[in-house]
Structure formats: structure tokens, C-alpha cells
Image 1 (cartoon, rainbow over the protein chains, first blue to last red):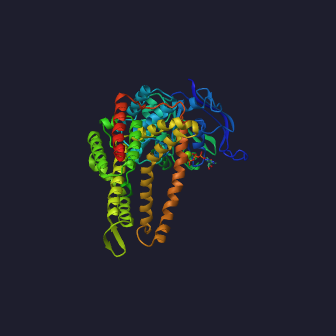
Image 2 (cartoon, helix red, strand yellow; image 1 turned 90 degrees about the vertical axis):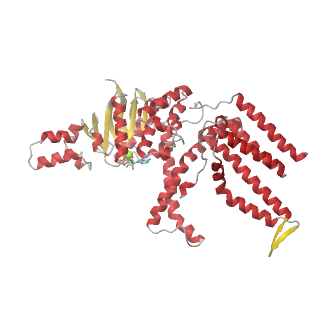
Image 3 (cartoon, rainbow over the protein chains, first blue to last red; image 1 turned 135 degrees about the vertical axis):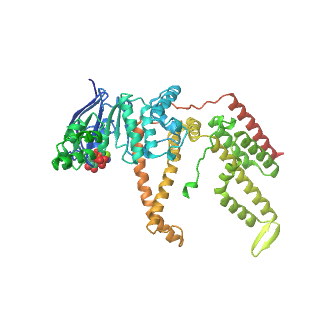
Length: 274
Length: 265
Ligand SMILES: Nc1ncnc2c1ncn2[C@@H]1O[C@H](COP(=O)(O)OP(=O)(O)OP(=O)(O)O)[C@@H](O)[C@H]1O
Ligand SMILES: [Mg+2]
């Protein structure tokens, strides 16, 4: 299948003179169209930096990033790249621009110069997809965190991207908000066939991915399906990360001498195994 | 408590006044202010009062919203009233100690107080019946002819939009920080002015730091959403001037003209 994103020999450091401190160190990733990729990693492992590089908010020190075969280094394609690979950030408050929900969702297409009637259609459709149509005339600051984050997602959807990069979209939400947003992300991947790159700290969210990448110091240290990655409980723990609670429990049971599979990801699987 | 301050409050509706083009409403408000400053007797004020009441009636905005808009300015209005009462020289009506109330002073005080009340009431109809986005769009469009001489019309309008969007967020944050500091024993409400000022420092520092962080994140998010200035931008709701806007503007200009003319007859 065709690649949505190709990252080739990517290096990046924030400080131009001091090339020694590489935040991204010789990274190679390709993301297929329609894939749901999760990126995990300790604080400061370079996940947000990578997300900004893909969106063209930062440019590689060396190496290339291709989004639908457009190079992020090419200034003429930068707006097409941002249109095709949208980005949702952690703090929902700091990405909403307008005082009314539908005006905010319209912000992206307005910047792209889309005609009014077409913007109207896109806004209605995007709000429908995130199940926020009811709130289109509301003021964003009166909504809950999960609702605000879904408005932010609608704002990206209205640009009609093929791929959405989420940088810890649930980190500031309560459990209800987190569920709402995860449900939305899954629908976008399964029903709307959007390619998803999800950066997260929550292992339970990673379980839903097609593929998981674990980063450390700007490099990939583990890669595979959630089942492959989380079965390596000790490696993950040595990187300062957790595994999903169920996997952890299964792992403890194995240590106690029970005979069950090491790659358990859900409660149902554990129940079956026991 | 601090959230009760409402700035640029909008009362949604579909009335004739709501549907008027924002540019026309801004122009009318502007002319209204100018007209007020031409008035030098009480009779034209009756016309102004009639005008305001008519617009309020047509706009379906409950009159209590207009009154609410006047409340924060009550101090200023009362203050100017007393300044005028006591400091205008003329025929003394009565006297408390060194404070003299003159006939001219009383007249002047009532006159100025009314002017302020009309000014605030008239302009609050504008913000009550125009959504913040149409308002900033209107300002942008009205200023755009001055872009040639370096007025950054789009940037000013965008700044206003963002300010309106973030004022409630920042007020909420102030409230939160204040409560957190009060829980740790900070006291914002007593002591002399210096102590109160000092108590504000631990409030303002985190507020400013957060505001700068927010601004940076917002700038990145806007760039990620393809924001690149005002050129070639389209709008969800384009402003549109049609016949009823022009007719309204002409009628209102005529009416204001009559009021101004009364000064010279
Ligand atoms: N604007 C910047 N200027 C200089 N250095 C930066 C900047 N942003 C991040 N860094 C550094 O780059 C490294 C990677 O940061 P990044 O934000 O990409 O990590 P992260 O994996 O997203 O972490 P977290 O889980 O905390 O979000 C960190 O050491 C950080 O200090
Ligand atoms: Mg990060």
C-alpha cells in the first residue's frame, strides 16, 4: 500500500550550532494510508518534536519527511502538507481561536480560501462526525474539556485532511473526556479511513493501534503490534513506561507460576486465559 | 465573582437590528456618538431617548440587558455628576460648608450624566445585537481602505477576536489562581493599598507566565491550521450590504441630521 508519511534518515536538533544534542536521531518510519499508529515514549524522548516536524512546523536538520510525497522542506508545499496532515494538540483551550464553535471549526477552511457555501457544508459535516452539532452556536469556553477537544478535532476535519497527528490529545482530560476523544479518534480511523498518528502516555489507548512505536532519546527502541510490544514487559519497564494494567496483572501471574500467555491486552483475554 | 464581568456580550436573535450588516451598525453607532456631542439642550435628548427605545424595541433585546451594561459605569457617571455639581461656577443654590451647588452646575451635571447614559446605552445595543465575529469582520472591512497608509486592518481584527475569545479563559484562570492562593492564606481584600498590591504579585506572575505560554501554543496551532494572514481568506459568513441596510443608514443619517440642526435654530 502507498505511504502516507515517509521519514528517511531524519535528524533534528533545536540548536543550530550545537549539533551534538540530537532530539531526533537517524529516524526511519513509514506510515501506511489508513494506518493507526501510536507513538509512546518517556518525557523528552522527542515525540512532540517529531509531530511538529511531520506538520512542517519544524524543518529537519538532515534527512527528509515526505507527506503524500510532498517534502516538508519545500516551502511551496508546506500549506498543502498542513492541509493533508492536520494536527491536534494537548491543550484544547490553546487551539480554539473564535468565540463561537462553528466559527472556530471554519477557521481552517477560511485560511485555505474555500468558498462560503463549501465551508458551511464542511463545518456541518465535521461537527456531525465529532457529535457536536448541537453545540455549534455555543461559546467554546463554556464546554467541557472533552467537548473542546472534539471541537478542535472538528476544526482539523473541516480542512479535509487524509491524516491527523494527535499530540497527547487526552492528557488534560478527565476519564469521561478521554473516552469521548478516543471514541472519536477510532471512528475517524475505522469509518472515515483517516490515517492516525497518536502520541500518548496512556497504554490503554495504545492497545487500540495497528502498530506501536516506542521512542527513547529520538530513536526507535521497540516497534510492532500492541501485542508484540506489550509482551516485552521488562523492556518497557526499563524504559520507564508502563504496560496496560491487564498485561501487568498477567505478567505478575506468570511470575507466580501460572501458565498463561504473556501477550494479554484486554480483560476478556485474561478471563479466557484463566 | 470575577466571571460576572461581561465584555462584548452578545444577545443572539433574528431581529431586524440583528440582521443589519455589521458595518452599517458600526457606522450608525459612530454617527450616534458624534450626534450626542452636538447636543446642547434637553429637547434633542428626548429624540435620542425615543431613538434608543425604538431600536431596543425592534431588536427584541430585553431592556434589563441595557441597564446591566450601565451598571459597571455607574461609578463614573455618579463621579462626573458630582464633579459637575460642585465645580461649576455660577449662581449659588445652596451650600454645604465649602461645597457650593450652583444652578449652572446642577444643569451641567444632569446634562453630562444623561450624555454618558445615552452613550453607553447606544453603543451597548451594537455589541448586544452583533456577534463578535461580525463585529471584528465589520471593523476589518471598514478599516481596509486605510491599509494603503499602513493601518493593519486584518491584524487588528484578528487581535480583537483572540482577545474576546481568551478574556473568559483568563478570567477563569485568575479566579482559580486567586482561590489557590487564598487557600494558602493569601489575603486580597484587606490591608492598605501597598499590602494589597503586594498580595497581587503572586497572582500576576503565574497569570502572565501562563498567558505567554498560551500565546505561543495558540500561534503554533493557528499555523498548523494554515493561518497565513488575511490575504485570500474567505469567511463562513461573508458580510453583505443590501437595500434594507442602505435605506436604514440613509433614514438614520437624516434623523441625526435633524437633531444636530436643532443646535443651530
Ligand atoms: N522549543 C524548544 N527549544 C529547545 N529545546 C526543546 C524545545 N522543545 C523541546 N525541546 C527539547 O527537546 C527534547 C524533546 O522534547 P519533546 O517535547 O519533543 O519531547 P516529548 O517526547 O514530546 O516529551 P513529553 O512527553 O514531555 O511531551 C527535550 O529534551 C526538550 O527539552
Ligand atoms: Mg510532548
